[in-house]
Amino acid sequence: MSPKTDETTSPQEARAHSSGLAFEEISHAYVAANGTTPVLRNVSFAVESGQVACVVGPSGCGKSTLLSLAAGLMEPTSGLTRWKGRSVKPGTNPDLGMAFQQPGLFPWLTIRKNVAIGLTTRGMARHEAAKQADEMLETVGLSGFGDAYPRQLSGGMAQRVGIARALALRPKLLLMDEPFASVDAFTRLKLQAEFKSLLKLDKPTVLFVTHDVSEAILLGDMIVVMSPRPASVQKIIPIAREDRDRAGPGYARKMTEALQCLGVETNLSGN
Ligand SMILES: Nc1ncnc2c1ncn2[C@@H]1O[C@H](COP(=O)(O)OP(=O)(O)OP(=O)(O)O)[C@@H](O)[C@H]1O
Image (cartoon, rainbow, N blue to C red; front, side, top):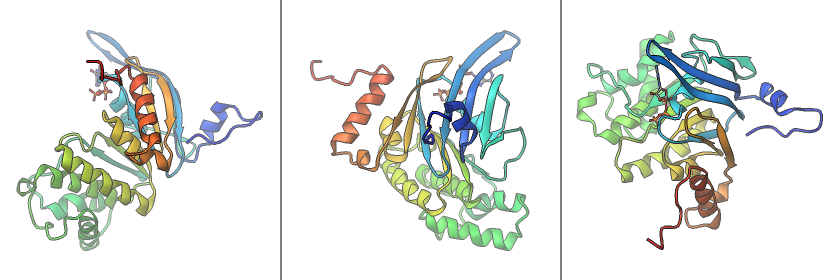
């Protein structure tokens, strides 16, 4: 979360000195032959090192665009994205790991090779990469599946492979775009709990896009609620450990706060 500020430190300076990921007055528009689509407007927030920020917002408001900017896949129309205080430039960020809604596994490679591929492309020897891939597969509950192919896995297992592939790189910055959206509700709950404990291993800084407020409360140290497109930050809701108890008052309070911010009716008892 943003560092404490005092009279001598402006919020802008605090973001510039963030130890993690910072967006500074980011605006972005897509320009195409048929016109310009403004997507982000003056977005500013910081995610401190080792913290998890979950981004929620209406469909099409620009959440994935924010991830692409953090990954350095494109540059904003205006403003600055910083990682560890340095401006993010297009190109390879060795600290970066990414996982998406569709894990995008290579069907012709074994599961082991799917996980190892990021390591070998970074120059690791094949046998060492295979060993680390097997360790990571064990961590995500897929030991014994290294020689299988993606077609032999269920949707939940394929998601686990996608997460293993991202985490095998031991990323300091992990960007995730609805990684659990395509699995059934029960598998999703299991994956969320597993992912939560995996984060404790290396404590990466995480930007996690989701449509699911309960997922955001469970996984996030903060929820960044975006407005409709062109999106700006509507509210930042800090999440404390006790708020993650689904039966506790904090959980209900944070859920209501986020949903109201998103314009969702929270009391349907009169219907
Ligand atoms: N490469 C592109 N060129 C033109 N417009 C784009 C491009 N990528 C995204 N857009 C548009 O920008 C807007 C924001 O897209 P983005 O995918 O960032 O939103 P999102 O909040 O992640 O959406 P969703 O919740 O549906 O996943 C959308 O209107 C989308 O159509």
